[in-house]
Amino acid sequence: MMDYYGLSPAKEWIPPDTTIEGPIAHGLRNHFGTDCAGCDSHMKVVFGDDKLIGRSAEYIAVEFARGREFQTDWTGTTQETLATYLRCSGRLPKSEGVSFTLFWEPLVMEMLLY
Image 1 (cartoon, rainbow, N blue to C red):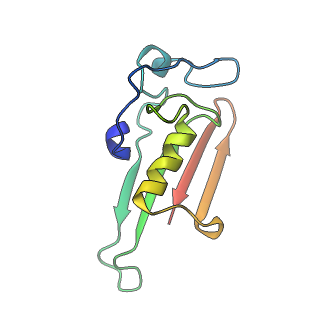
Image 2 (image 1 turned 90 degrees about the horizontal axis):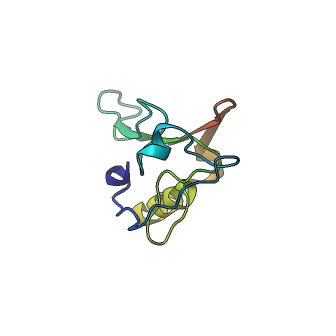
């Protein structure tokens, strides 16, 4: 995931307080990893539809409302790392262009940027 963000991981991974933060399973044992298998972020670009040609949609998987999966030397949480990625890529979302879906147990937040 850090490769997707184009950011270097922190030299020292700070573990979460698992009573209020994630990861709590696989990602806890495998630093900079997620608990969710197959929850990979990706970019989709439309090529064939004349009305949508050149538009893109980006799916960014964020498992926990407060997560420590992806840390850099200057960001301590996944959310801060995501904000840094968006800021550096010049794609900070506007409120009308962001769709959030929240699932509870386990808590998963999906963010779709378009």
